[in-house]
Length: 179
Image 1 (spheres, rainbow, N blue to C red):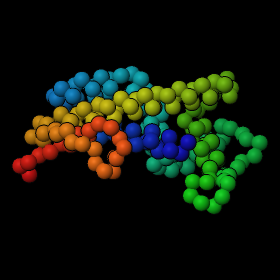
Image 2 (cartoon, helix red, strand yellow):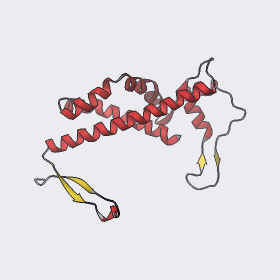
Image 3 (tube, helix red, strand yellow):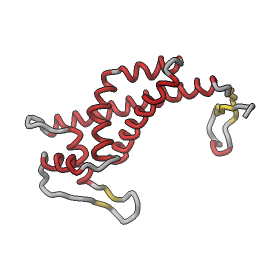
Image 4 (cartoon, one colour):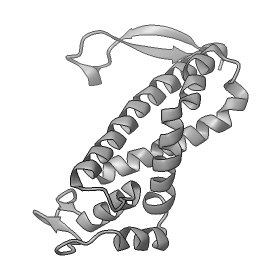
């Protein structure tokens, strides 16, 4: 789960970057056809304000004691397990309590919520975040492709390098010969 929370926070940063880049690229076809609809999408705006902002600014990239207290005050566990693991090596531990705190802070359960509704809402957040991340990446790649062409770069089909041996197809490189 920590990887998901980190990725959601990076997506938040990506949208902040695009807001700043808008000045330079707002008139390009790639921005207008990919980012403008993405930035106007109500689902994106809701995810940005209610999920990505909260997660990034309160419990992932920044530690807000008040947010942690709020989260802990809203749930009770039979026992509070800080971490579990199968060994001492990297990647063999899960920090359960921190994940519970982040999930609870994100979901803000109400008195009528039950495990089923919370799991459903959490699943929807994950699905929306993944879907919007995919749209963001595609829009960004299209925008950068157009920007590189506008700056005089040319695309050239090249055979895969040895590092990709065994793969079929070609790789595309953007080259600029006057630099």
